Length: 230
Image 1 (tube, rainbow, N blue to C red):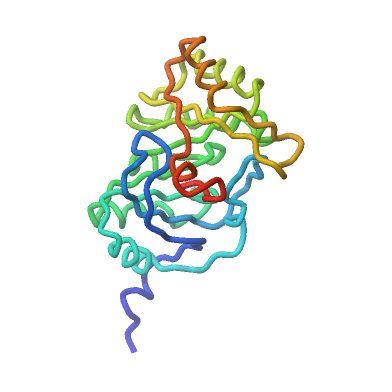
Image 2 (cartoon, rainbow, N blue to C red):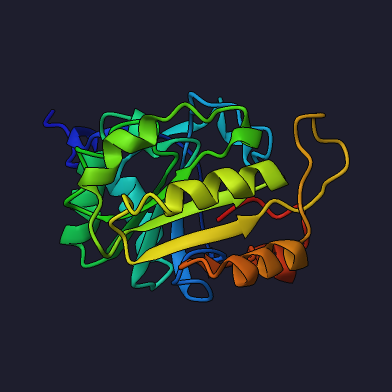
């Protein structure tokens, strides 16, 4: 018996596929289809998607496309976990683009973006010291970024702010958009996680006249702090 077209489709391990408003980046507020891949090689103190570290289910690319088509969206975000750890992620991006979608990928920057750098809009989340995962690997990816990509710093302490400010002032980031996002104080987090108030970060950016965009996680303002990152 001949195999079906779907059985020939590459597979990825998926934590969830859903339809929501983009909560971050310069496209915040737009309807997106979200594909959250399973697995991450980092363990950041401020992570809000720890449930994506393990588990998940295998989905063929055809099955993923069928779900995304049902949302009637123009934009798709592939996130995680860390989506670039799965070998079939570039194939998924190409399939989405062939279907006419504008594709964004959210990555922690400690894995090479080379396989997808020319295929999608990259949102690189550079890990600050409070994450406990600031390894410096992002620097190898900087020359692969396009002006239309975006770089994000999650600021969870004054030390994070000073570190991120120093990186920005090196003038090595080629993107037109650099995002600073406050990691708000949350009870129950590890002692390494301090968090900062949004007003404090906004005022620091103004005082230091940084060429960055301040952002809050829109989805958490709408649906509450338990809403995972999208």
